[in-house]
Figure 1 (spheres, each protein chain N blue to C red):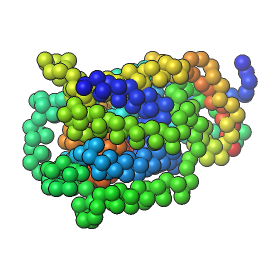
Figure 2 (figure 1 turned 90 degrees about the vertical axis):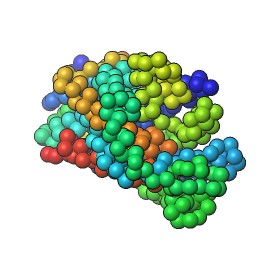
Figure 3 (figure 1 turned 30 degrees about the vertical axis):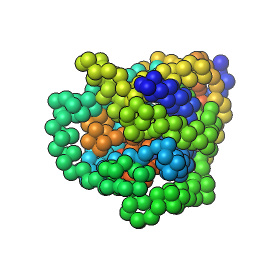
Length: 79
Length: 330
């Protein structure tokens, strides 16, 4: 399971739009370069929007892993 | 002909769910995430609908019915609606289609929205609506394209033919749509496809709704009011009530088929309080404004109705205010 050295896990399942997006942005701001953030979501729109927002901020999306029915983990490497 | 409302609703629900069409996101993403994906969908479909509606009206298939301008409802009411949609986690259409996806916060937001809208429309709070309706400004049309007594449109303001006005309006929107950069997004339904499907549905909705003696196109608020009345009085389901039920059914079918249905619950239960306050503000604002983001922004703006254009501006201002308060600050 330990695919990546996850520095921080952000569980935003069930949160109202756009809380997952905003929490992701806030978490990334506090992290150091090279660290890995894992965002755990269950809303399909977040899966589509968060990677694009993150990329536009210059971070790297390592993987979007499907971990269950309508559940995903997005692995992000901080720039 | 009430069943046609259910059919339109189911199709609308599928498009909303697949296209992830939420105006709360469309307005807000531009401010918070510099993401214009949904805004592009919006400007594209508004332009297309503007031309289609006038063409079908000229062919005498439809009679257009822009809402009368109300200087208080279309500003203060719309602003309250804009504040509410951010708290509720979705606009009127966003909350409604997410009910079908199993978003439990939307169940409460929707109930609160419907209940408050019914209270302001014909219940204990109806004095608010009656007080404001007095300020309605009507325009009198003789062209046969618009209802004789309805609201002014851009064509009235500039005193030119509605079709020419629609072409100019669409051209301006499409220059923005296609000449500026669009945020990428991996979606199940491309925004251009969603825009074309929704524009076609909009015309079909207007035509079927007119046959059920409701001279308007897609909407949400009136449907919620009808559902609340049906649940609590002997009122019968009307076209728009059936349409709202259809949206929930269509979104549920689409979510299940796409393996996206899930009962989603927030970890912090205070979120339920937040979305109910949001829903109540939306219900109050939408009835005072004479429509929500679907009745005004998606249907009224293509009619080029002044009431809908002003309302949409104030929806956005309210949305940005609350988005900044909740999410924008460091």
